Image (cartoon, rainbow, N blue to C red):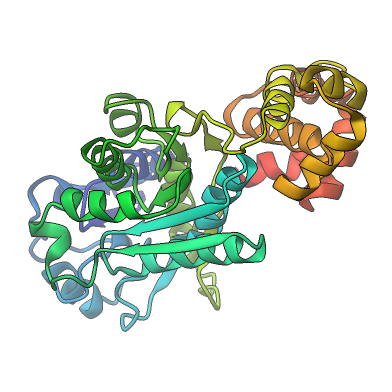
Amino acid sequence: MALNRYNRRHILLALDYYDEEINRGVAEYARRAGWILNDIIGHDRRIPRKWSGDGIIALLNDPAGPLARFISRTKTPVVDMVYEAPEIKVARVLADNRAIGHAGAEHLLSCGFEHLAFFQLGDANVERERMDGFRCTVKTAGKHFYHLDFSGLTSNAPQTLDPTPWLAGKLAKLPHPLGIMAQYDRNAQYVIHAAELASLMVPNDIAVVGVDNDIISCELGLLPLTSVDRRRHDHGFEAAALLDRLISGEKPPKGPILVAPGPVVVRQSTNIFAVDDPHLVRALRFIAEHFREPLSVEDVVVASGTTRRQLYELFEQKLGRAIKSEVLRCRLNEARRLLTTTHSKLFTIATKSGFRDAYHLSRVFKAETGLSPGELRRSR
């Protein structure tokens, strides 16, 4: 039976700030489910008077704002997409912020950085959690962590002060080369501008990672920005899917559903190996350029220009992993990227990422990540 306006679900999209990719994810689910979607709040900040519907998808960034007060009074099923209003007891689908911080740190560690920093502009839960995931990963690796916390300078600093001069002064005093992560792409641009102000080169002196993989911020700044793709489209889609289940009578989950980040999209801002040995640099560049091909340890040794024993020692001392582990890391990262960004068949992904065949990829992927390639793809 065709849906009509009387049996279709009416859903309110109530976001404290507009995010195009989240909107796209919600809209895709709404199309599939046949919803009537009201997104007036995202356009003119006006809460519809006497609104009556079946459910609300919220993004409550201001716990004291009018939208939070509206949500706290409603009897309609609600799914919130951030954790800035914990006193409002609703179901939540959240970005896995600690995993996002971990991903940024892992990328910088894979480049060989000994000194790593996190730039925190504000004091929201999302920023603290990403910083914590980043810090724990750096500390676990035995490297040096620095917290560049601008949030405590004034109560309204993120909105009214330009952090660039302050940040330039901090960057000039820290050891170089330095790998640094910011909680959003737009905040990572502050780091790049601060490095320029301090006469530091990106990525040679300061390598920078952002979060969101926003094309405007990543492609149109001073230089292309490396970024953790946090799957904003999937975040919106999963929030809508949970709301649909709640409306159908399913009990809310006991805790928030976490959306894992996607791959780190590497651009010029981290296009460097931050190690001080030229043999190791040559080996890493050779692996990065040839991991898709059949590659032996001897091939890497020859490219490095040193002996097998010395190269083994350099990998262990500087990176904490073996040559084969670095080759495997590059292949798994490429496989993960292809699994989450393309619809290619598994055999094609295996050959494009350096594995012998689909079986070999599946076996290694499961052993290293805990998920099969199919499970990872379905989770996306």
